[in-house]
Length: 345
Ligand code: FAD
Image (tube, rainbow, N blue to C red; front, top):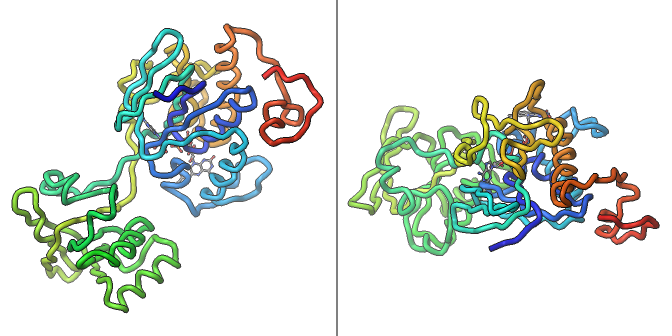
């Protein structure tokens, strides 16, 4: 059981900034995200796109914004839990017990849902046999790389995950074939160069085409069928298929937590960003209220008011004094800077 002042569900830009606003008021936070890294849509959907509407930053890339946010909140030492989906949140007196799909349990004074469009889940291979073999021969993440030693592996995808794993596994696997529908890749140029070098060295093969079928004996995969653009279908011997087609969001478990929803969005009070359940708050793209705009900037404002409401609730409704960051004892203590004001955090 992990005890925390606040559990933040979602490490998108708004969930990350929530850590900062809570920290200023002396509240600590654990942040859970089903994705393997922070950033939500910024990282998953448009890492290299420029953003022009963050105040005082005329332009910055989405990935860079997430890096800056992480740096900004670091003084408050958030604890991250990636690759974890919060599946249940239940009141326990004035506190909450939250459980993840892998069985981690949190005891939190308040819960902030910063779930954006929902939990990111891997895009799956749309073949009946793939569903049958999922978790054994067909995998969407690599829990333990050593189990691929001496195996014949097909890796599918054109992004960083697919290329990184193809390069990594060809050192120990019997064979690795990378399959992608085109010969242009989304991965970083340095990774693409490494992949091409591995192909030139004969350690890795690249095949342009689409996976159209799987052959198997019971749960054991034997062949991956790949259709080339010409229509020619090749049969590749394989005992494991790794699919890295990116992630897509789905509201998922949040819909079952008993919150008032409007068109799959969580209804909130705009003074506090509290949901229909006392002690559970919702900020960022996941919430709805009159005039809502799904912008990072709006989420930052929402996180600020939610933090004040959470602090007030944690002190039996006491009024929370406004403190500028220049004189915030909580922030200066974390930064190791002396400040000559009373510490009421
Ligand atoms: P998200 O970024 O969606 O993050 C939510 C996180 O919660 C995800 O990582 C998800 O995995 C996690 N999560 C959800 N449910 C669970 C669960 N049960 N357990 C664990 N984790 C969970 N906005 C701007 O202001 N400026 C722009 O220029 C801009 N450009 C955009 C361009 C594109 C192409 C798109 C798609 C959006 C753009 N936006 C822009 C919108 C902006 O990205 C969103 O407003 C912002 O990402 C919302 O942040 P968030 O933290 O609320 O949610």
